Length: 285
Image: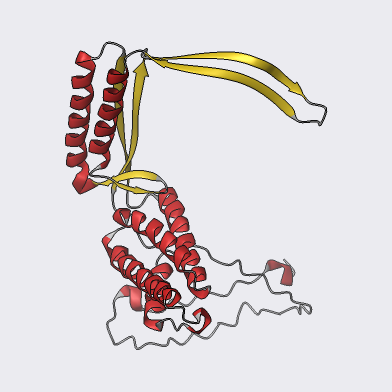
């Protein structure tokens, strides 16, 4: 069984470009690529960049930035890119309209430059196994790095990994987001305590970490463990096999049950007694 850790949502694929005839580059080769006497590879050139209309170029860069900011506003960012939840999808559509309006408004007056905005929202289901495994694996690494940093009393590493974890929080389902948020707060508290001790020139090795805080981190980490991994059970080696004579006329005694048949129980609560598996190699077939 694996906990559903993802919120239903969409990966946001965003591409904003500036197609420009406004900028010209001129490259002059001064020294062709060659192998030197020392065995290294060397080349030398000179490049000149000319902007025909600097004001338009600056306005184009600003328009592209505004369009991009509009798109990412309703999104959450993490190591895998931008993502928007189902409830924020309408906001993303509104943001796309606004971003394209910004680009078109610039393009109407620009003579040499054109701003383009491309947005694709790819559906990710909460039971998307591949996405869930990748994200769970990434989150486990964050928690492991936080725990290692706590043991090393490295507050900078704790903060770095807590920040990365916080960026993933928006794409988590409600049942795990609460514990993850508690772990994030715990990590920040630990980092602040260590940093304070360092500022006060206390003995870092003597710093005592609140066990309640580390428990919150471990509890959250456990939610992203791979519960589907099952260790393979080895077949036991039997050194002495003895033949067993079975008399077809002798009826086997019924197997005693551990429950009272007079008590009505739901079907899934009654114990199942498996029949023994008998290998045909033990008998003369």
